[in-house]
Amino acid sequence: MGPEMPAVLHRALEKAIALAQSPVAGYVARLRRARPLASPAEIIAVLEKQYLATVTGTGAAVGGAAVAPGIGTVAALALTGGETALFLETTALFALAVAEVHGIRVEEVERRRTLVLAIALGDNGAMLVEKMAGRGGQQWGALLPDAIPMSSITAINKTLGRWFFTRYGRKQGVLALGRIAPFGIGVAIGAVGNRAFGRVVVDTSRRVFGPPPARFPAGSTFTIIEGTVG
Image (cartoon, rainbow, N blue to C red; front, top):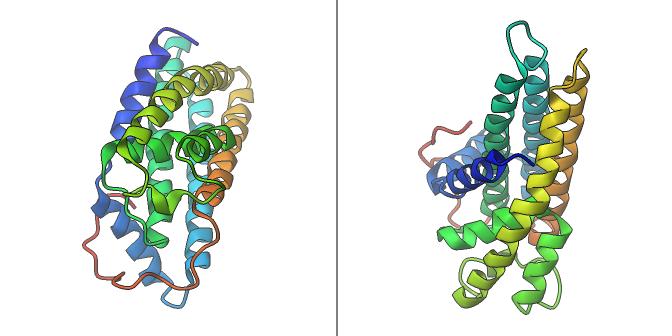
């Protein structure tokens, strides 16, 4: 992992967790307006499908740019830094949108940090929260907005942050080098690698939030003002 990767990851993470709630709610509202008869389970399935398509496509695009005429190795590596930021922002949007469908709104920044880091890190991240929050099982997403004490959140984020910048950073560094492979190989590596990361996120979100609710929470509406995220 190059010396720039931790800085890239830090900037990307801070931008991702700062995502306003209104674009998240607007994103879910647009999906529901387009599918007025869809159940929460069906909306979450759409969120998962769109998320995987987005992260797979961006990975392939960066891999393709790396072999384009006039794009050198340094420029290609710079592109992967931007792609890493996009991946994390997309992951944050996905996680918060799934929470929205469950009727859970995570407004406080440090609690959002817990959610995004745990989901990005997969089972290990989710299990750490379960253990440190004193949750005797899975599906702790509903506890995140206010039931888990802030002292626990602070301790959890300290460990999750360390894991994120080492384990996740190392994986992204290897993947970044793979994306600049010649002869179009980087396209496949970028797409397959990002989809694998995406599958981890989707599977972990199911662990964190549990089964979709039978119905949408009271007070949810299609008329929320749309944000800038589509």
